[in-house]
Image (cartoon, rainbow over all chains, first blue to last red):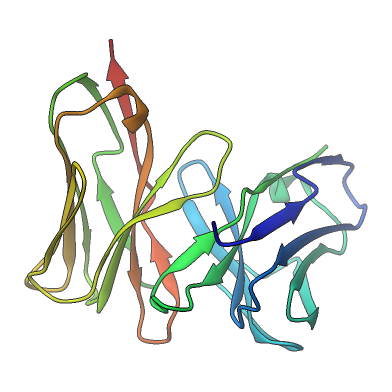
Length: 113
Length: 110
């Protein structure tokens, strides 16, 4: 158990509204990641963080922003949600012992109507 | 960009059968990872491979790091109902990012 929680676990929202997803970890990991999972695409990296206030873009970052003001929290924000952002969102942390691996949270299912 | 081609996309097998799936890429990876995802949950790491040619087992699961560094294989022996799920391969890039395959969905027939 990597001590990762995500909130909310499910959310339904309307197009054009802002949405913030939260990833919380209890083990002081430096690296945190946000992925989205869609049928036919597998897992794709949105943004990642390598420390407090240090973030960078991933493969599919358009329409998303992130913030990390504390080690334990990594927030993903959709400034103006679109239907194409309907997806399952996973947070992950880099392993501390096995640094080449990542461990995932339980996911947030987001539906944008 | 770098891509992983995972096959097959889905498999239907009888309980007790052995399973084989693979992942190939046009790029070299220094680390290969295999994850399993159960419905409604996040992917869980099964096996990590760090060396070309390496063969690693985890219970009934065996994975191999291809000698060319461009492929990896996962075998499951004597499948059981709880093996149902989606299996993802993943490779670690030089800039420390993980690229995932699109997954193999395993179905087990009673």
